[in-house]
Length: 510
Image (cartoon, rainbow, N blue to C red; front, side, top):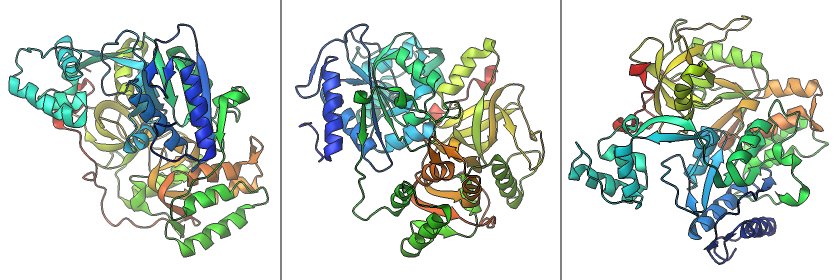
């Protein structure tokens, strides 16, 4: 760990050294910056676990930095060049776009699991430009592309190290460069998986098929996937392969949100005791709000977190009502949650295209308006590296006490969406927002029902997950009331992708 520039706590240092030792046995010597070819047929899996604030992300970041310094090549969602013989590689993955974007904001070149399972098919002429920029080929001569355009691409790449951005600077669109997607055929080397508490067994098996070395980073206090019976994939690893971070690291000024999250570990703490603790914290620190109502303005970008589905639907209905949203259409700026892709097998290529561009189950999306063809929507995928997408859409608006959702418009097939003004706490895992509103009456119901999960009161696990979604301010909402909006829905706060890179999802050919 001599190459790191930060001071680790004892448990972080121990985890760093153990992972370094594991990698050394696989031909990646971080101490000496020596790399040898991977050993065929040899697989290793380890996990770093710890609660929020224990330093998992900092440890991941330092490991990534040290691997890069040792000469390991990063495989990301940006561009994957032709593999060099015996080159050691690393991919940093997260289950959702939002989780990947949190890592990217901290300087870690992360992408989604879906994006790495599929590989793009590049136009061979434009691929020559990418290989040249990556210093794997000579300067190309491309018909219709001037030397000035190539120079612009090179200058952009020197500054930003982004192949798609460089191609955009040369005047090319993403759809010019990427002609399609296919499931990955060639295996990869080392994979770091963040938010691994969200992985189910099938995803874990897919990752084991792709990577010879996996290091999982996860929080054992979160909620397990709904089909995992309270167990997480790292729970099944042998004890020596799991490194738990016990110490909780604080900011120079203590973080009241983390303090509340960790207070839930006290077995004697009841719901009403906890709610008094929230109220007392709110009196002395404005990073915690003991709120008497839901702030509708926040719902457009960070959904209210609830436990019960009926509560979610009521809040969505109220959000649309106060914005005077028509029943037969969406307003520009309304939030959506992707609920999957409904396409038959013969359209597998389009499914891969949409998933690789960020439209995976659970993705948070902002509606930007109708597309050029009936049933198509222009969308901004929150947290995606290239957020603007136009796709055939099926939008379902659920109404209170109605069995069937109302569908304001729909394509015959495509990406399906639910409204995103409120989501269940289960679906919020892996995401983080500056401001998070937690609907406390729902958690009170869970507490009254005395439900348990993995040996703990369910309300505590729900509260822990919901609270730790807030990066700056927690709003603990105690009453079933909704504030009026201060203005109409807007989209000008969204950072647009460069026009040449706007992804049209093959709308013209659909």
